[in-house]
Image (tube, rainbow, N blue to C red; front, side, top):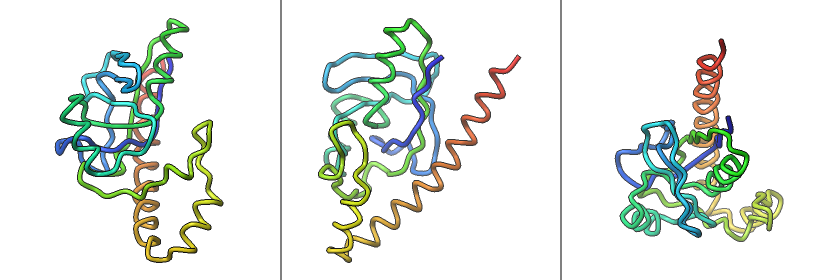
Length: 159
């Protein structure tokens, strides 16, 4: 079993900030590949960059998915290649209408977050700090919820 676990944004109003969902399928926006799961949750769209509020709403309408992330399709593709079952569980850090900081300039070539560069960016623009702090707090809450959900899944899978 391979599981993609992490954060996602909401693409529709029924997927609320601060909730955790097992994806019913994952759709790769770039390739169009669809990866179905055994779960009955909302669809998960994988994209190659952070979507801002207007783009999230448009993506939700266009692709019919309820959540968006940047990695689940790659994990699903690896699972398919290895012929192992795949699931995706995501904690929702931002609602469909929430504004997000554009952090695309702070994502490295392998998808890693360039933390020091982002901190330097924020220190030079202190008016951006409240939004960054709020996102950090949301992420902390979602991390706890995600850990609890994973613990439940592990316990349920044990003989």
